[in-house]
Length: 287
Image (cartoon, rainbow, N blue to C red):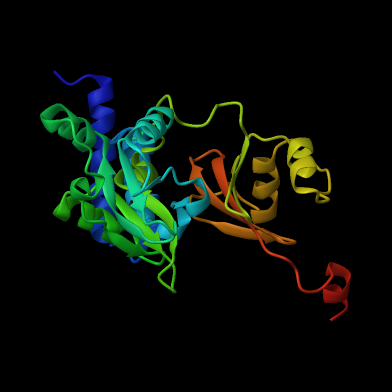
């Protein structure tokens, strides 16, 4: 026998099917509205809907949006002694490491912790060069959905990111891409929960939306007009004029805010890029 909840789900499914086939989605916005309708009618749960929307957003995001900047890479140099390499691996907790040449600019390969350990167990020798896996290089502009497809096809987990001049600018892992779909995949090596603002490179930052306006203003040394909000997430919502959606961008002065994670009610994580303004705000208003 059908109970009330089953009947409600069937009605929701019927409405979703009718809406889907009578009004074919003409863009991602309409498709997201259909997914939201499905969640509202209990056809899918909120986590499933969030993953579907995340999968759609991945096709619009580029590697530069999520990569780990070169300044934060835990790397190994070909000439490092084995003791130092072991200490580096132990401190980082990672399993894959880019190995640079003596200049520290060129990646020669990727060293897996398990390869180093297995080699020591076999013959007690440490020939690092012979253990290196062939590195995968990707441009900053590569779309994440294409990168994920390549990761799966080639069974790679890590790629070296290069800029337009071929210089190493960061790293990106399959976990980084998957997090855009399923949300945070936290482990004991992620940055501490109480750290609200984290710097990536010289002028790139990750900021939790719950960060207070006072903390944000003190960190970035800028003026923000106090209003009916207490957090930087509230400030971004005010700038946009609506609840932020994942992938949206808005600029305020020399700061560009990009919403990296969000749900139907609010944003959770922001990426900020600071660029020097060429002219003063009051001069721009006179034009």
